[in-house]
Length: 113
Length: 112
Image (cartoon, rainbow over all chains, first blue to last red; front, top):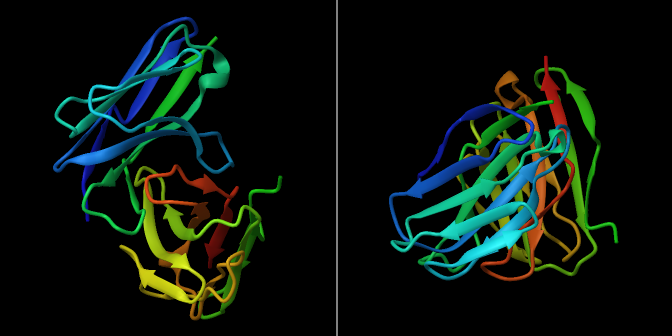
């Protein structure tokens, strides 16, 4: 299957700091998605990207679809305690005909007040 | 809107026992998926379905079975539980290729 490399694996930051995480793949994707998982819950979609170079925001979150189609970035500005959770990137293989997403291993974010 | 509903939320099984994890969605989505999540390992696809009557294996199907008799329901069956199947299981659905998935809240399974 596809390999998505997500980094960093974990982050410990102070409230108010900005956060950056990224995801790279060995092959081209035509859709990149970012999810957040709160403790004890399922992942929830944050941002979807459908076009190379696309930059999309959702409140304090901004994500970009890399020009090479092999990477994506997520930034969180002015972090708050409720940003705590696991953030997953996911990509859709352009060769896939079955709607399957491939997921990164996640970035565990801890925010200290 | 209920979205994707999974039951039970928690379960403890003894080695060799069997059980069915239930998943139902009320969004009339064609695609449904079962993932397992182990600490630090992300989400691994077990089985998926592109519509009623059609299922296929994902990355880690061994020890599991599925069926899709209706659009709404996609149960996951464990026939002979093993400790390696201790995990959190998520069901998800989507309407079309390239859509984001809607996930259920998960079933935490422990096999002892």
